[in-house]
Image (cartoon, rainbow, N blue to C red; front, side, top):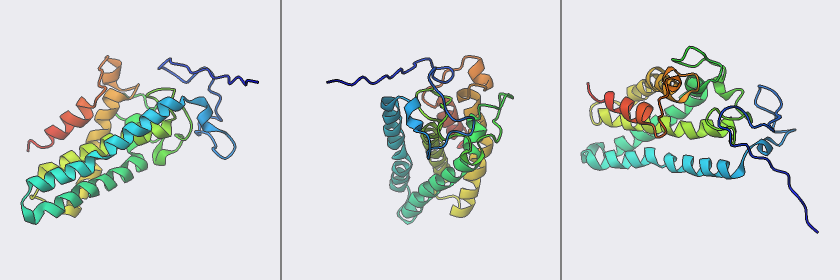
Length: 215
């Protein structure tokens, strides 16, 4: 006696899977709909593991800066990196993801507030791949924003105070990181439309964090 499971993954990377039938643009209601049925479980597991691995980078940078700093500043550098991570999480939830990856923005430079507070992101297909939900994609991209913020903290090692640095991180992520991420990773970004391929964060992560250290 055997049972047959009908499963039709779609590997077209533009648009939603052909068999997607969610509950509208609000992202779905997990109380009445199995939101995982539209997505590939293997792809979801891979992105979760990848996000958790990147999650280790901010504390790792904190230990790196702590080892490079003088003894009196060692603990404060760890606190600064972990504080920047916390601020990045709040900023990303508040409006960071929407400014970087809003699929309804068309100006090509920065997103709108369609996903403010992570609204409309629960179970809809992600802009990166229709095989994973947008909420998971947001969690994955959050790790890059937080890691970049932790890199920026190293630019003011032993030269700044903790609280003003956290305020700076919030506005830096809003005014610098999110627009650049929108340019190269948002399907409506001007650089993305010109064919720029940034699959490892060379623009929003490396270039942006390095340039902030020049002054």
